[in-house]
Length: 120
Image 1 (tube, helix red, strand yellow):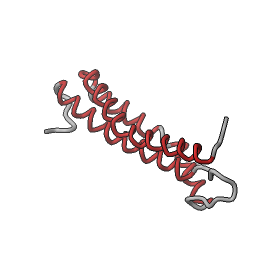
Image 2 (tube, helix red, strand yellow):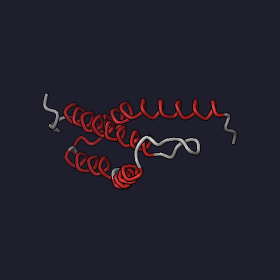
Image 3 (tube, helix red, strand yellow):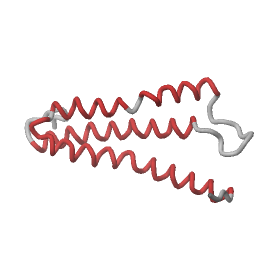
Image 4 (tube, one colour):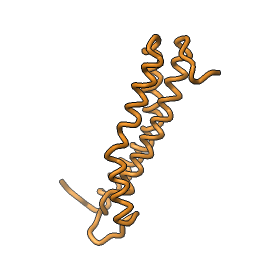
């Protein structure tokens, strides 16, 4: 199987799946970096990383969302004849790889807020 071929709809779909899965994994790395570099939940708690490293992570996070977007446009241009097949599989693969980390992070945060008794 040629992952980078875009000669037919199925090949463009495979290429979209490949690009979507890898960009979803990159999004997972960005989300985990956000979790690690966030502020502590309570005052005086130890941080997961030191201040210089936290600032470096946050500087990287400011520019990192452009990486998957540029990859989507460049690869979408490559698969322009079968863009619908490419885009469909790209979206499904990116969502399938990014959703578990986002859901688990949301549940962990809700559990932490619930245990602390924080009310809005």
